Image 1 (tube, helix red, strand yellow):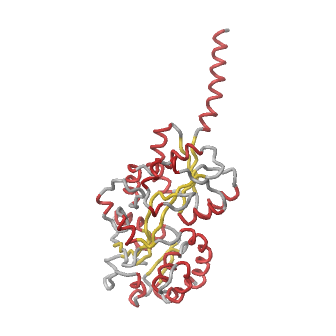
Image 2: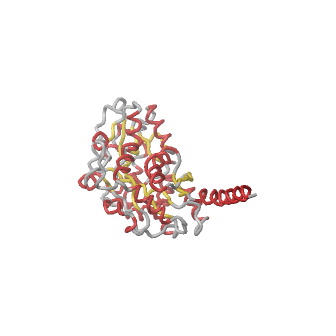
Image 3: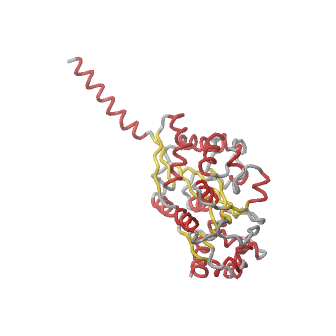
Length: 341
């Protein structure tokens, strides 16, 4: 009888422990594929090793995840969110993000200024959209300036993303003596580029296919994509124009209403750990966002990987992230109607 009581008590304790263990996890919303793998293999791996807490990922597209978060406002399905800097502002203005307490993120003390996006979200890695081309297929043009995309020899050779026209909109404004805030002054300049477009790519895989096949031997390309293709044997040259390349920063934030806020802070601190930053830079050929990361020299020398204040200052075109968020829908509509049609 005593053995039966002990067994029953043990089973009761086990039954109580299982749900508690199942609930002890941190949920992260992020893009799928290599982006999920990047975080899983670096910060999430160390986080679980340090805390014993499992990490679960919810994946999806940038805008799909934003819309889901709006519907779940106040009771988020995830604790942490990864998204681009400007889309992060859309979350923040919808009151979906917690205001960050940087005293709980010691590694944030080493953030580069360009990664301090807002009181609600911080940069995790950076990259550029710039000019990438196939030197084996394009031998008649030397790319030193964004202006070179407008050359007559470029007719029907160029591809650019259809999902984010902000890069070319800002560049066209700059070349017209204006900036992102008065981007309309660059509209005529951008319209003059229409004959040089061959295609518009819809995602990273589509970009890779178009340049690998040679269908679009010149692209406004994501630097990390280009470096990956080069590692796969595709001959691509990445150029940082004299005006600079358009900076992109991916960010991390805590959802307002998360019940795992303290764990979320630990995760963010690990994401900004210099060793984790170096690993992420090596895996994705991205710029680290902390000043004390020791980057592989072979990665550090790649165009679009910034490891010094001088590079951030002279090689990056930084578009105000909040302004970019406010203008994104307007820019996409104008671009679709006036350039893609």
